Length: 193
Image 1 (cartoon, rainbow, N blue to C red):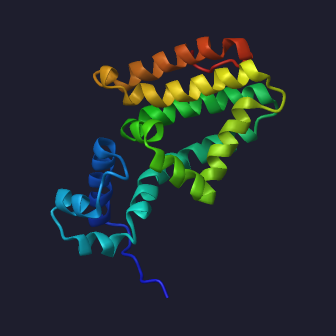
Image 2: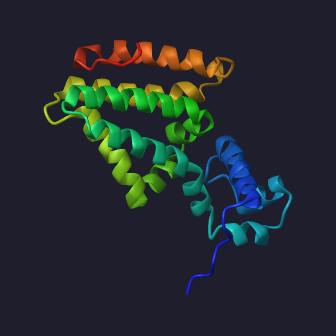
């Protein structure tokens, strides 16, 4: 029988905040549970009381952004046509990466995150559905490349140290504008650009 894990609370939040900072600095594989414990100022056993593994911590760090993207998908899927669905996903993805700027570096550059997302069925389903909604059923190679460039760029920009001093509103507006230009050949209208 699996041991119980502590409910949500301040200690759990402190572990997640410390883990996010360390993951952004060292990557998931480069961060140990001891490093997380040291950052929080507790023992490794105290971290284990909150989480079963470092992977569980990483998944929990990602969960709010994945949950937000799942909501965007539900909104998009309620729309009657593919182009409007794509526009909502583009706008929602931009809003998500700006809101979770500190996570963007993980999504963009940490292979451990990719493995975790694709290894967790709930998270993989969201990632797969985003791609399906963006690419659509009738997309050609140029469209697929445009969407790949868009996704890479939208995840990289918030994590770019050269853009660290750009405030969230300005980054959001600029990403919408750039997305409209990158995706123009695909026919996707970007809301708010």
